[in-house]
Each structure stands twice: as structure tokens, then as C-alpha cells.
Image (cartoon, rainbow, N blue to C red):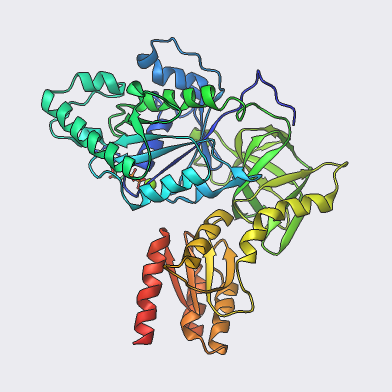
Length: 459
Ligand code: GDP
Ligand code: MG
């Protein structure tokens, strides 16, 4: 595709890390404007993401760079993480949706199981990232300097507070080294190509937040220039499939590159084959001050990336989150595009023996389903899988899992649901058909529940 070297798009950022390290608080802090009016500074809530415009980045980092900063991206698009990790697994035509990530570590706790899980995902997707060493304000006798750059606030601390910081930092450097990763304070980094930048932060006091924003932007401007050059060819990823009252089915997407237009024909991967349909509406939320008007959206005739958008169209019920959405132009071959959208799914579906005996596995996106299947297959776990689904657990899924009773494998009449809701009807049907539904947001919690249950059954 043709690139335009002069035009950069918004880099797409995701925030990862162990539970309670402060991911949500960091996102909240990044979103916060200095003025009461939500629209001031141009920060806008999009579908599934928050847009931080150039002006706001300049304002937030002014104390750090004294106004001398070559900022060339139009802003940052931060993916809203609803408390889980599956966003890392969103693909866009083979590569990861996220251009960059913030890996959050609690300075009081160091590396935790999900820190390592996140780290491994980032490495396998080759996603560049920075580390936020968060909650520095929790150290003994810390002097808060609201919204100060890290080095400035460190230099203003009492000796013992600075010493505690250094001790904890040194320990965490060793923990990362044990994972095979070189890390360094970003202002002391001897080689940004081999050392990952650490940025000490507090999401509560805002200390280090200017440093995070500036380091992220510098990282993509200096090292990922080619990746973030705007291209006119549509590149778009499905985040979530939703029903909206009065409008029918919709998908929330991140449009990375290109333009979408009302009336265009699109092709989306579905669990039971490719879906070809027309865009009936392109929606974005109302400006923040009007968000209270429930379900009101702005309609667009056309819209350009990078942006989070809601697309309304018929027949999207079985669309699969985490896969690419393609536009079918008049000169395109529909069969080719239908095959292309399904290509991501083939490997995942091939892993399930539909005629066999095993549990029923359900996840929020193709990526998280893939991660879960990978885990269940591993030597340490070895739980057989006979059925899969993506999205909320419905009656249909319970019926699917109940088949194992007929096959005299009642222990497999079980649904392992990762990071998805279970409908009331599905719960009721589970009771009726004696199908167990285990839910969790962390993969190994599902494993723990299921193994405990198996031991009980066998005893
Ligand atoms: P998440 O699970 O990673 O999204 O973590 P949250 O953002 O929900 O934060 C977990 C808890 O830590 C909450 O009680 C936050 O108020 C608190 N927290 C987050 N960041 C900081 C920080 O920088 N300093 C302090 N003192 N508390 C924090
Ligand atoms: Mg959270």
C-alpha cells in the first residue's frame, strides 16, 4: 500500500500488567483534563478508546520538555482496558493491533504472575513497550509533587525516600533480568535498542505522567516511523460484537488506517463462516458533556483512522472479535476476501476435535480463545476440548456442553468461560441440564477451578 511519509497516524497504545498495579488509574490520569469541561483540551471518548490530541500532549509534558519537543503524531489513541488482558491479543491482518504498550508494575510488589504473562505476550507479538513503575507515592515519607516529571520529583525527595526508591528499583531490575530482560531508568538508558525504559510514576499524584506520554511518543516517532505512517488502505480490527436496542447488530472496531463510508460492503470473520454485509451506520459517541443522553450517537457519512467506531449492519451476531474487518470494493473478488478474513481463525479451529470428548471453551475474542486453547493443550494441563465459542455464554452453548452427558462423560459437561459474561437464561439452563459453568478473568484460575472439580468427581 502507498504510504505518505509526511502524514503520521495516531499510534495505538494498550496498558497491561498484573491486577491492582494501577492500569485503570493510569488510564484515568491520562484522560484527565485540567479544565472541568470534558471537551477542553480536545480529549475525546471514542468507542473502545480514548483520543489524546497533540495539544493535550504538549500541555501535559511542558514542564518536562520546556516547550522544546518535536511532536509529529496527531495524538495518541489509548485502548480502554476493561480490566482484562485480551486486548493484547487483538490482531490486525496478522500483526498486533497495538503499536505500543505500557506494562505497569507496582513498585511495592515487583514482578507478579500476570506481569510475566503480559511480558511474554508482548515479546511474542514483538510489541515495543515501556514499563511504568507505579505507586512511587506509597513509599515511606514520599513528598508529593503533583504532575511533576519523575527526575524533578526524585530530586525533591528526602534522602531516605530516595534511597528506598533506589533499593526497590534495584530489586526490580534483577527480577526483570531473571526474565531475560534488560531495563533502565529512561533518562539513564545506555541503549534504547536493548534496554527497556522504566518510568517511575504515580497515577494518583500524576508524578511521572508527563514522562510516560513523552517517552511513548518518542519511542514511536524514532523507532516505528514506518509502522505509523498513514496508509489509505483500510486496516480495521473488531473489538466487540454488540446488540443495540432499536438499531440491531453492531461491531465496535478500531479503524487504524483508511476511510470507512456508509453503504460500503464489508467482510467480517464469523464463527460459522465469513459474513458479507453493508454498513448501515457509522457512529461515534456524543461529546462528553452530552454522554448522559443514553444511546445517542453522532452519525457519519465517512470517517478516517485511527479511530474507535461503532458500525451498525445486519447479520453481525456471529462476528468474531479480535479479527480484521475488510472492505469489499467493486473491483475486489468477494471469495478472496471471505477467505482472507477466515485465515486467522483456521489455526484456532483446527485445534478442536469436534467429534471428540472434552470441555466446552468460551472466550471474549479470537486471541484470548487461542491463548486459552494453547494453555489447555500444554503438557502441564492437558484438558481436552470438544467445543468452542466466542462471546457471552448463551443457552446454545449450555446445550452444546450438555452433549457430554449422553456420551457418558459428565465431568466434561462443563463450560470454561474466560473473560465473558453468562446470560441469566444460560445459568438457568446450566442448572437444569447439569452443566457446570466456570468463569474467570485469569486463565490459570479456570484451570484451578476445573482441576479441583475433577478431583472431587473422581474421589
Ligand atoms: P488495575 O487493576 O491495574 O486496573 O488497578 P487500579 O487502577 O484499579 O488500582 C488498584 C488500586 O491501587 C486502587 O485502589 C488505586 O486507587 C490504587 N492505585 C493505583 N495507582 C496508584 C498510585 O500510583 N499510587 C497509589 N497510592 N495508589 C494507586
Ligand atoms: Mg483495572
